Image 1 (cartoon, helix red, strand yellow):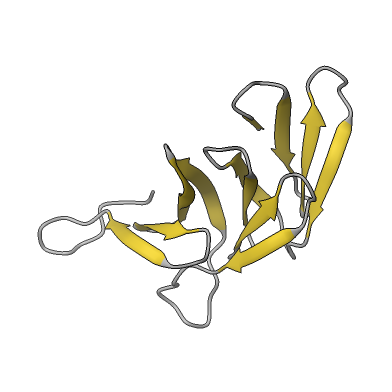
Image 2: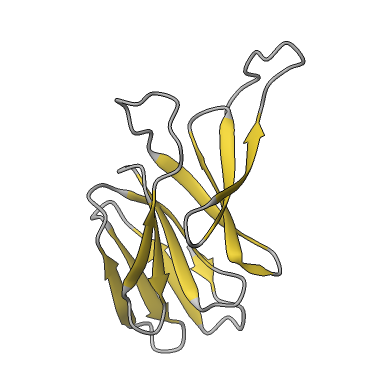
Length: 136
């Protein structure tokens, strides 16, 4: 669950491969965001509330127009194993940068990316010898 900036709406994600925008006052579902092919594990608003970001077990992040529920981009972060697409567990907006977000899977690597899909920075949880320290 995630609130928008003014607290008037909340967005939820679900095992039914969707995210939903709900009006806090009305309690009604205002929009549904459909397009993933597996569980939606995380959802958030961008820092300017113009877009929703969803992270899914299908290995993708989708960027949605909040007003129209249209998917405007599908992003697949780099994967260490070419044959395996790791479930994406969390996506968070970068504060004061509405065009940027960070995503992580159950691995020692997280990625900062633009909403256009370009990886801007890679974060790795490794010790000084390069051994993974754990997971994000």
